[in-house]
Image (cartoon, rainbow, N blue to C red; front, side, top):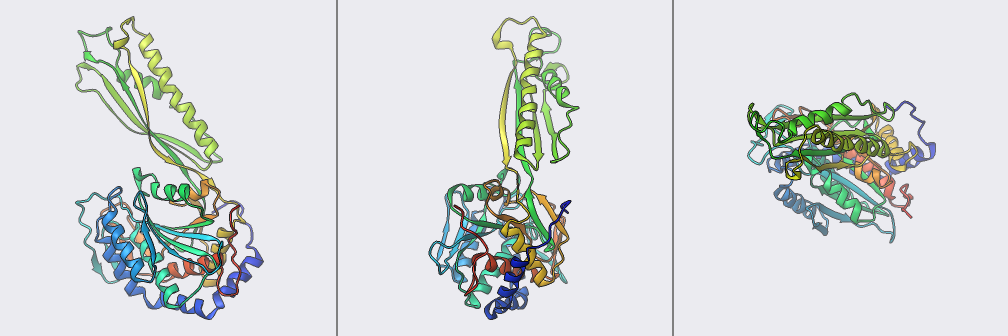
Length: 421
């Protein structure tokens, strides 16, 4: 939890309570409870369509068809594969709110994703992360359509690509970079007691050191070792301890190189993960660590009496991940509305934290945003033994519905989400 959690705005809470009492809103909330099995069946159907990162198209096509079947007429797939379904508001120039759930999974295309059911438990890779999120936003859409709810602002229902791993939240970054949106609710994970107020940023690099290499005895002194240079580099920052507040970390996650025990290594590479709650701290850490590889290669080259430039080591730095950090103020309208909606629905706020989700992108753009959860209970994410249990699965769609309607405005109730300048 945050160290200092301010009280809810009484005016925001009162407004969300008014929205919750509207007859059509009550109907949409009841539909979410009534349709839990239908929604669960849809979650299963989507899970059984393989969708590894960078290979989401088949699942995306299914999401598109479902959005159209549930009443959206403005549905498209953008340049990189995001599915965007627009539910227009009644007020021209009203706020635009995105409800986004990522479509990709961490599993390879040949992974068995057939769902096995045992009572309330459904087991399959990806069943929770993030087919539960897709289930939730599609249920929100069905509820709004069946209850005939007219909103003042627009709600975009979005299935994003590339949230996992090396996908590097490319879907949400593309969405935020190329569209004018006023608010964003990512839907990921299952614990409806969780609200994210911040985004953990991460920068990832692959650093390669390359030279000619050669026989360990015959070429000794004639060509420097890529492995020796890499060892020098890591030693330079092995004792580096970044800021504890805001929390900032680093690790060398992988290292590989060389060919045989009796060879001078021609190649060595590492992959480094750096994280922080603060972009400035992250950039400062990145600059410090990356500079050590240049120093180490220069030192390794200089330690031998080699005059041929072709025999000298060279360093190559390749960025393989860039998730921006961001933190929302506690009075952010999306956070205040989300917490108020929890209170109205009787959901206890159990986690008020920061994490890495599709919400990283809008937070880094200073867009009011958070990540809410789908409802239910899931364990073993990113593991072939992943499972999802049908426990209060209606609460996710109810929470997202009430928060979204309060933000964009409904009937005579004003929108709590301001338009960005």
